[in-house]
Every structure is written in C-alpha cells, then in structure tokens.
Image 1 (tube, rainbow, N blue to C red):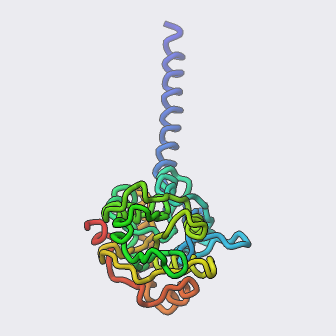
Image 2: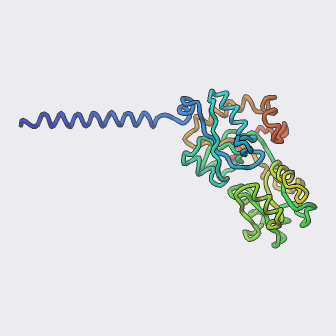
Image 3: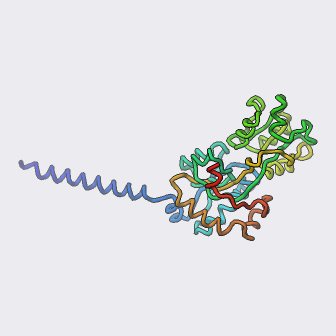
Length: 285
C-alpha cells in the first residue's frame, strides 16, 4: 500500500509530460507554410535552368520571368528573402512535395496531370511552341506530324515537359525521341547533329537560336494544336492552399500592370502574353 501513491503520482507526471510534449508537437505541426515564411520573411523557390523562364546568371543570381515575378509578389507580401533551389525539370514536382522548396517558380505549364499533384496560381503568361533546327531547316519540319512521318528524324525533348506527351500523341515514336535534362542539352544535340530538331516554347527556342550562332535557327511557323498553347504559373503543395490563394490575390492585382510588363520585358514577354485564363479552367480540360 505504501508504494501505491508515489507510483500513481509518477504515472500522472508521465502522462502530464507526454500531453505537454504532444501539445507542443501539435502546435508546431499546425504552423502552415504561409505562417512559417511570413514569420521568417524567407521563402525557397525551386527552378530549373530554362531561359527565359528561370535560370542562373554567371554571377550566381537566380533570375528569369518566373523568379522575378516571385520576388516582386513575395516582397508585396512582406517576404524579403527569396532563395533559389536549382534542380532538374523532372525533379521539380517531387522536390516540392518532398519539402526541398516552398514553390515552383520555373514557368511550369498548368496541365490536368500536374493539377493532380500540385496546385497552381492563375497563369502569368500564355505561349505557343516552336522548333529549333539546323540552319535552313533541312528536313523541312513544321509540325509533330512532319517528324512522325519520317522515322529517321530525331527530336530532342526536355525530360518532364508536356512536349513529350504532345509528340507521342501526334505519332512520334519513342525511338525518334531523345530525352535530355535541360535546354542547353537540346541545343547541343541539334548543333552536334544527334537530333534534327528540338521542341519547346517559342521564347526558349528563339533564345537557343540566338545562343547557338549560325548553325541553328528557330522555326516559329510551327503548326500545332491550339490546345497545346502553354499557360505558365507558380505551383504549390496541395496542402498550401492558403499560400497559393494569398499569392494569387497579389498576382490578380499586378499582372498586366506597367510594373509587371517592365519586369518581364527583359525576358521577351509583352502584353500579348497576358491571359485571362484561370487555373481552374486549365485543370479541368
């Protein structure tokens, strides 16, 4: 009998400590990403090297259409520090979901497949695709169908992009497709003759043509399904809806403004790229 009271007290103390620890853990878990980044005034953006959407300058600075938009919008939300996390394109969504960064700022297209994995802001631009070929376009390529008709033609596609699905849906065989990690590899493949063409956004292919010199050119007369027009946006984890909504509210006030157009002009974007489409419409296609 003499030991019963101390033992009970000991058990009660253990329960109390356990409950206190559980309460602390629960309160820590309750902090949303929006609350955390607001408190720390810092956010991490995931990006892949794809000019002009997002890329690393020679001085190490992260820039491009999407990071620059992110910097402005987060500044308007009182978040001063924006840190870039470089990754390959195909690892952006897995990296976001794994918590390596808080938002994808890479000009990622909104597609129904991606909408099952992440949530998007409304698009910040609309953009058609184009081809990069050897100078003079010797194989006379102007569509995915042109490539599909000639089994000898090789097409360089950046892994993880929607172009892979578009090419396959148009009849391009996997044996004709050269998957590469980034746009630099696309340019190298065409310049070296390992691919007859590369496909990507019109601005990207024009940029590669300018970088590639006299050996290559951008074929902007590209016959494509109008539904393949790309709509790029910032992407978030599904549980970060409050953060996405806060960013979306700022974007709606800002997109199309003089400040917005001035911000994206260095990357080749203008008023023609502004769209009234919504993420909800594009996810439902």
